[in-house]
Image (tube, rainbow, N blue to C red; front, side, top):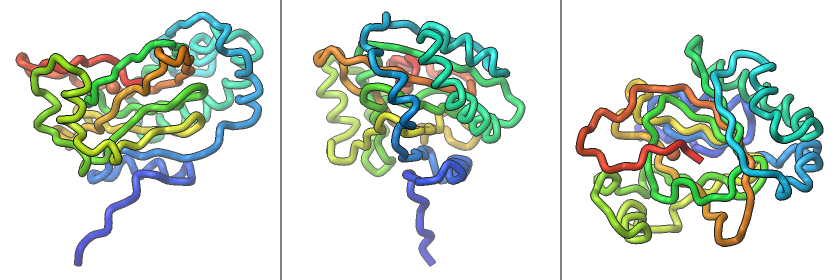
Length: 227
Ligand SMILES: [Fe+2]
C-alpha cells in the first residue's frame, strides 16, 4: 500500500513533533499572531534595526535577547519566546540551542538555499514570513550551481513559483537542515521575503540546533543565517 505523507502545515503546537519524522523536513504551525503581542508591537517601525544572539538556557537569556525591543514589547513577547524554547528543546534533547532576536529592514537571504544546521525554528512576529518550498518543487542539483543573476538562479532552483509557500506573522516554522542526522541532501529549501523596496521591517525570533558546517570546498552557497 502506498504510504500517505504527512502535511507540512499543522494547526496544533503538539503536531510540530512531526518534524522528527525522517520524511519531513518542514513543519509549519499556522496560527494567528497572539493579540497581546500584536498590540505590543505597534510602533515597531520606529525602532532601530538590531540582532542579538546567544546560547539560550533560561528565561534570563531570552530576556537579554529581547531587551532592545524595550520593556513593554519585551514583556509581552517573553511568554511566547519561552513557550517556543520549551517546544524546541523537547525536539532537540540536551544539545545547546542558540537563540536570535532580530529586527531587520534588509532582504537578507534572497537566494533559495539550505542551512547547514540540525534544526531551526523561526517565528516572524512582524512583517512577512520566511518563504519555503516543498521538496517536489525544488531542483536540488541547481542549489550548488555557480550563479551571477539572482532571479535566474532562483528560477533554476524553483521553476514553478506557485510551489512557494510563505509563512505569515505568528506562524511557527521549523526547518530541518542538512546537518540533521539522516537528512543530508534533503535540507529544507527556503529564503527571506523581500522587504527593502517596500521599506518594511521584520521582527524575528529564531532558535537553532547547530550542526556540522558545510564541508564542500567547492560549495558556492552563501551560508547566511535563515531569515
Ligand atoms: Fe537560511
